[in-house]
Amino acid sequence: MLRLSKLTDYGIVVSACLARSAMELLSASEVAARTGIAAPTVSKLLKGLGRSGLVVSERGAKGGYRLSRAAEDISIADVVDALEGPVALTECISAAGHCEQESHCDARANFELINAAILDALERVSVAQMVEGPQRQYVDLDVTGSMGRREGSMNESV
Amino acid sequence: MLRLSKLTDYGIVVSACLARSAMELLSASEVAARTGIAAPTVSKLLKGLGRSGLVVSERGAKGGYRLSRAAEDISIADVVDALEGPVALTECISAAGHCEQESHCDARANFELINAAILDALERVSVAQMVEGPQRQYVDLDVTGSMGRREGSMNESV
DNA sequence: ACCATATAGGACTAAAGTTGTCCTCTATAG
DNA sequence: CTATAGAGGACAACTTTAGTCCTATATGGT
Ligand code: FES
Ligand code: FES
Image (cartoon, rainbow over all chains, first blue to last red):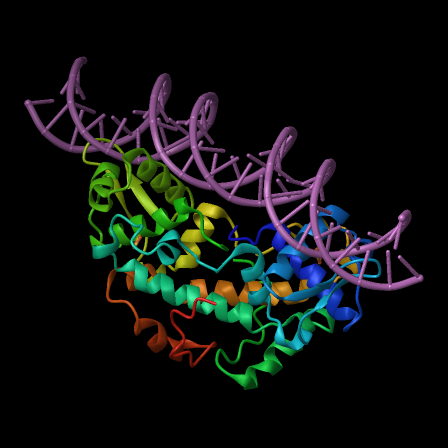
């Protein structure tokens, strides 16, 4: 578990689809056709992404959607955030004083660290990287910042 | 979103509680009292953790639970894994050929990378660290391996 | 031997969240 | 002025999650 909702998963696929067509305007039904996702669902996703400003829309005949900025500048974290709200591993992290034991809870600070690390992972991959080849991009990108050296660790499914 | 189920969250708190008492045997109701979590729920969690071998139990009067190994050797990933099953960000990752578009899907490989990164974050924090002070442990631990240098990035809630 | 205590395991209910569909309203192109 | 396409929201079916409870089994103490 610890999974993204399927809707968010689709949302990423939809974003990738738009990224593939650069700045072309694509209608929701066109995206649906290309991705194989049901049209009303695609529509719903695009609306959601639009509300968060990740995609821009044009109404009317010949209208459609396109990404609001370069695919390189949109991270997976952005998409997740747009569709599911802020990443918060536990309730305690999002809800301020919501937890009964908050005061004597050592766990909380550590949860926040873990949360930040996950967020980091999500931010480090852009939609652009999803459409072009996989793999190495991630490692290469590493020159940009933290979280270095993690070569061989794929498929280590716990 | 992207959250751990509350049950897993509690599971971590319960594990931390056991860790605090070293190798003492604690009954489920004792743990419930200390953590403030409802007794039947604690019981359920401990049973689950027992099945995965993270805690060992002793039956009968004066029975109870304790961690099966040193708290330092139990990672958050272990606990999550025990209670929710393997971490799999998307359905495609866990289910082999379950996805319609699997063939022409560039996203998948990248999802696996992200998944591995998250797993990494979860593995890098032990139950022992949850009970002792927070914070610095995480950064310090970094000498052990990958994913270095991530100082100032807490609370950056997307 | 017997009783009190405590876990094992699983059945079951209620609440919550997720998915996917549909309907009405508004905007734009031709 | 009509056909097309998005905006926004209502909503029902379905799936998961959370929490409770009951029976069987094991152990320690009297
Ligand atoms: S603050 Fe909620 S469990 Fe620690
Ligand atoms: S393999 Fe399922 S969406 Fe890519």
